[in-house]
Length: 283
Image 1 (cartoon, helix red, strand yellow):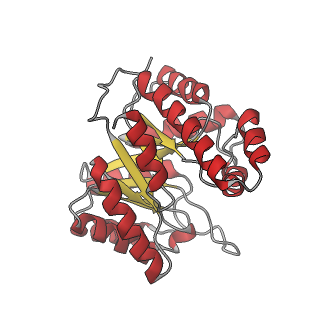
Image 2 (cartoon, rainbow, N blue to C red):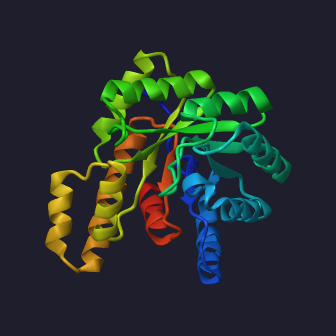
């Protein structure tokens, strides 16, 4: 069973952003953040491109969030990295005042060889713990519907357990729209001795084509009834957004009623849908 958690206006939320590529994107993200801060997030995380390709933008966005008085978590991937490069980046983040990391294996940039001194996210978690002790709260990724590159569901569960045993403090899931997948994942991992909090990742629905593309790439399942309804709306953006708000609010309500520890929103650097979902939830 999931541990019960207090409901009401103080329910914990956090938000994910990605580093903007243009000055206009940076301005839009600053405006979106200011609106979302009204929800008093526990922290905001910032993604990290394949092979650390957005590291400068990631760290820059993290610095801005910290300067705005909000806790910031840097995504941190290890594929292609060396122990020395990770050591230097950890020192940079610590000096910035970062207290939370999202430790990931990460994706290789296209055309990049398999080099580096880390093979799995669990290797990175263990290295961070050995190097920095308890300086960082370490989040790891969880896949209720199985990582798309996993050899089997059992192999995927074992990879998650290895990350927890290496020293992870908590996990954030890939987004999903079937709450049963999340509940089963939590039960399975607890049965195997992993008892860290597992926070559901929530993806608001704003565009059906974008959602289909993301889901095909990351292995997130869109239930058939949702897929068919979205297809039936065609180019009717207003109906897609209204339907998406209903679906995602209902999902969050189910999760919160079951006592999940928090909700982590994949904002896509926008605030409107997340704000409306939280308003409906009374957060």
